[in-house]
Length: 112
Image 1 (tube, rainbow, N blue to C red):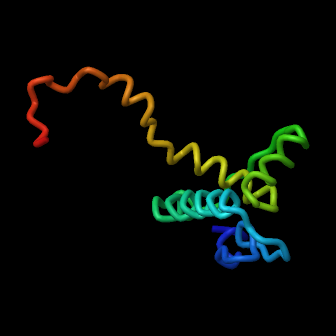
Image 2 (image 1 turned 90 degrees about the horizontal axis):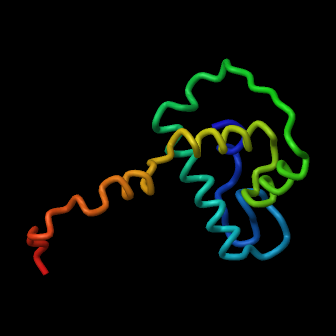
């Protein structure tokens, strides 16, 4: 999983697996849990096995700064990998929910 996998797990006093001297808010731990969960799922899905592709583009420095701040990820490569994994693993719940809305038989007994 790249540099992200070599980081220490989040504990009190660290943010996104990176040691620091400040207390961690619940939001920071939640964000780190999300990053870790996405990257673990990507690894288990085989999305991180072979790294031969290269990606390049012009991106707003402010977008990069805010995304790193939001995730706790420090390297551009790990940030791009997380963003792409997050998209690749998307389950499209909202879209599927909208498509199936009203499709359950109203006479179906649900047990309560």
